[in-house]
Amino acid sequence: MHVFENWPNAAVRAAFGRAYAAVVPSRWAEPFGIVAIEAMAAGALVIAADVGGLGGVVRPEVTGLLVPPDDAGALAQAMIRLDIDFALRTRLGARAAAEAEQYSADRIVPQIEAVYDSVTAPSRRTR
Image 1: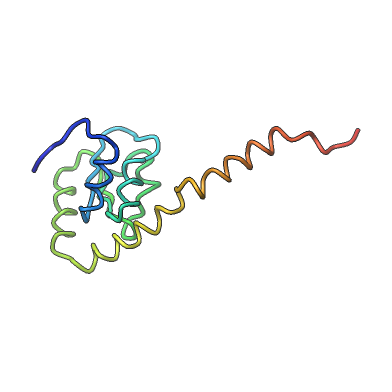
Image 2 (image 1 turned 180 degrees about the horizontal axis):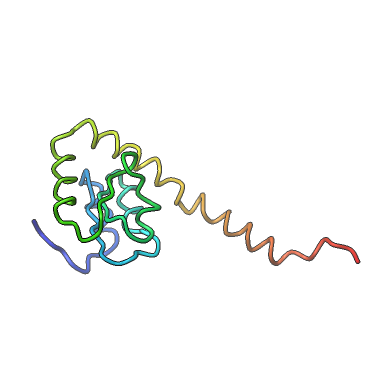
């Protein structure tokens, strides 16, 4: 195993594209789970700790696997399971890439703009 620190985002995304899985064993409540989304967008399924926003991004048995935080045994079992089950990792990887589309700028920006428009538009109520 190799640990690489401080990689540029483009290098990280390229690495995700070569991997069939990304392991995100966070110990603290990730507010959103952007690492998981970036991995999924590259077609990598995700094995993540079920903590914070990761539990909302990674759908168990759909886009990846969730394990309890700080449970090295469960994490190892999930990794072994994917290593020996080609059909499972193929199915999860394909679904992960499709699921990541909902977080693309093309999908999110119009939603954000609609919220801004709704709060900045003049009131339509008459007095």
